[in-house]
Image (tube, rainbow, N blue to C red; front, top):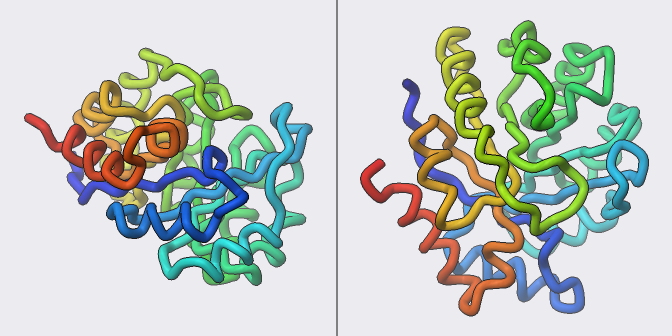
Length: 224
C-alpha cells in the first residue's frame, strides 16, 4: 500500500466569514496543508455556496494550496474562472458529467491538479478508467451538501478499495476523504489508505481550532 504524508485541509464552509482572513491564518498557524473550498450550485446538491470571488479572496489571504471541490452540474463552465481566481486543484464529481476524462484533461491544461469525487452510493468502477488522468481521488464519507454530518461507517471499506485501485493502477493520485472527519474517525481512514483529510466542523467548532489541526494529525498517526 502506498503511504503518503498526512495532509489536513480545513473546509472554510464551517469558517466565520466575518473574519475570513483571521480564520485562514489560524489554519496556517495550526499546520494546515491545504485550504478546502466547497462550491455548491443548489442543483447537484441542495445548498448554495461560493463562487470565483470567494476563491480570489482566499487566495489573497494565504499561500497555501486551495483545494476546490465542485459539487455542481456542468462543472466545466467554472474551470477557467476558478483557475484564474487562484484554485490550485479542481475536483469534480463523477456523477455530474458524462465526459469525465475530457474535463479532467481540461483541468490539467489550466495548470490545476485534477480531482474526481464519488458519492457514498457511487461505485469505484466510475473512476477505474481515468486513474491516469487524476491527481486526486476524493471519497465522500457523507452525502454532500451540508457540513457537520455523521461519518458513514461503510466508507472505511470503500477507502480501502480505493487505495487498492490506485495502487494497482500505479497512480500517484492523493486519496482524500471528506465528511465527518474527526479525531474518532481519522485513524480508521488513515489505516484504510487515505492521506488527505477534509475537516470543517471538527476544526472550526473546536474550543481551540488551531490546535485541533495538530490533534487530528496526531490521531491519524496513533498506532497507524
